[in-house]
Length: 253
Ligand SMILES: NC(=O)c1ccc[n+]([C@@H]2O[C@H](COP(=O)([O-])OP(=O)(O)OC[C@H]3O[C@@H](n4cnc5c(N)ncnc54)[C@H](OP(=O)(O)O)[C@@H]3O)[C@@H](O)[C@H]2O)c1
Image (cartoon, rainbow, N blue to C red; front, side, top):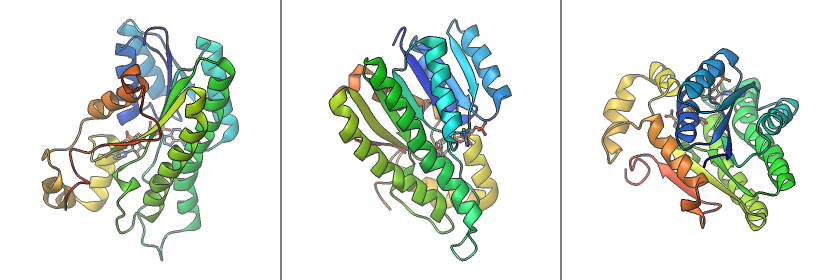
């Protein structure tokens, strides 16, 4: 991946941050995007300290203009775009359907689903214009398959990413751009710790973890490795596909 350029949204935290470091270790140049610029600047400094090249751009993926600027920044700084990781996401407010407000629904769908659509739209335009092909990896969830009570907005947004990924793969793969979806299970990030704070440790430790074949939660670095794989030539015949990185969570009850 030396000299190739990877763009990672939601890189100020968790899986996105680990993914930026994983691409840097492979020699790619990195653009990191999120709303918290300070966090991104710290990440850029740590990648540069590893001898890598990285650049940060403050971005809100739910706003088309901001996404256009993110892509323009990538081309301006590094001159190309080879790998795009659409990872930015929020869990939103967990609410029963009768309490779920229109604003809370819109916020989750705007960031998780519309945000991924907007990123793919402008990433694809740039990749097609540049003519080098590429790979796009969207980040779904085990909740791309499984619902849970109070999760209607989040679960719907993550289910939608399957349709977005398969449809756009059919459009772009013939043009040399592979598109895939990674579905992480329980992963040790700030989002996971926020959810634990809301639903309680017991749901995870006594309810969910015993159903994980590997009997532990995942590390963001383990999801990052799968993302790097789906961008690399090692996955040259994989497009439109969904890869669960969940320790077996979705396979048995
Ligand atoms: N952790 C898990 O157990 C788990 C499981 C399945 C799927 N996932 C998915 O994995 C992805 C990463 O989650 P994580 O666990 O690493 O969560 P996290 O630690 O909360 O990180 C989420 C990232 O998304 C960014 N983000 C949120 N809204 C954004 C917006 N409007 N524009 C740009 N960036 C935005 C955040 O940055 P700013 O706040 O700085 O904008 C942050 O960098 C998400 O899509 C999540 O749904 C996580």
